Image 1 (cartoon, rainbow over the protein chains, first blue to last red):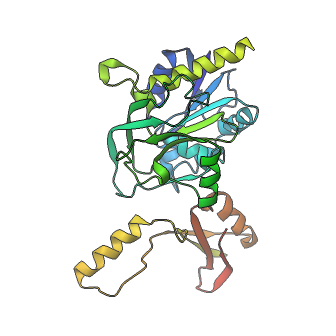
Image 2 (image 1 turned 135 degrees about the vertical axis):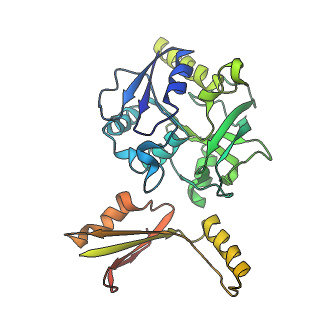
Image 3 (image 1 turned 180 degrees about the vertical axis):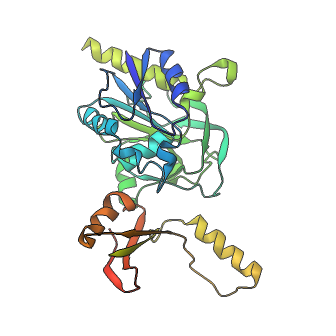
Length: 225
Length: 84
């Protein structure tokens, strides 16, 4: 399978994302000003500070030419993974519900957190173990997940919360300890923690790998149908 | 028209920045201050003020988390306030 990792001006985690994707498949960089998604099976919107994060995090990046193509790709059922700033961009673009607000501490946080896999019913968590805990780092200032009450209840009822911070681990004040959510169609997923930084035993826990392996398995299974 | 767009966190959403300011003021002797909220001010010259609400909805604010008010820069209330 083939991943495409977007590079915006101000992205900083796209190379780690590229290397993480290459552990399970092919991967190419997609430049923000291009419209050609190069036939990828999954688009990764990486972490960083796209367009300086001016105005609001993710607010400008959503208007990049490549994002118009990503919106069409997603509408057609293509897999989209947004990590950290990528999650913020997907929320601003309306491809995911909710928004990310400044951490309640108002501080930049950078640490390892424990995550609970809430459901394996998604292309992004299908290869996780039931109720598996993943150890993945977070590093952000604006990671407090918010959605209005009614919307949050609908998302919970529809099993759209894929990852939660384990009890006591919520680093940013996210509602319902939410670390990652998907859209109703379950093909777009965003999370604040960085799975691409947790794939190599050389540098620590490998809690990010199951996310990439789940995507590969999902694409492989879809190809057999 | 010279316009000011005043952006503030939507009512009911936790505003830690406002809380931090509210806690800091008494330390300087400014007591009796409550309900502090910190937002953002955007100033712009605009040829067609009628398009300002759409600008606010699509880029200048995120209506899910922010309320805004459009004010003419001479101080009079312009296109009015809007809570999406």
